[in-house]
Image (cartoon, rainbow, N blue to C red):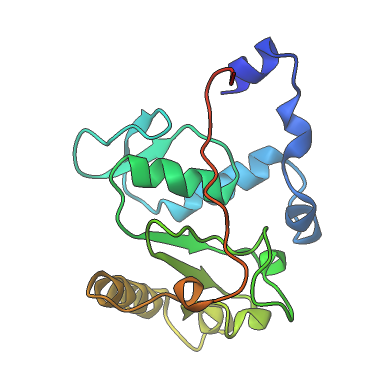
Length: 180
């Protein structure tokens, strides 16, 4: 992706990390990428997929795509994903508004389960994991709650994003070539 941007004369390094990421303490795209890697856990990466490419087998895969959540969600969906879990950063959550373009992390195509430790996320998240940070909950218990939420959503439970009636996030499709 970076090679395509360079060929087009575009410097994408200035777009990441976002102002919200910087406010949260990130200073470089490398730091943001390390956070993404940590979210993968301890399982080995089975391969790197092109945008919207279907995984060839079981396990953890990484998709080469934009850092924009909603475009990434569409790529996951095109690859066969049926439910997504999005880890929301501390400063990406709305304080008073139910939806903001940078914070909605939803798509009308698949259910998106939002997870965060952010205290201002109450009412905007499906799973709150703030007690892991305070030591009141083991990370394994939070993992079980997330797993159970996935099962409930797969069985028809609506996610928080699906219950909002106001702002609807547009479907943003990532393109890899010129548009005419």
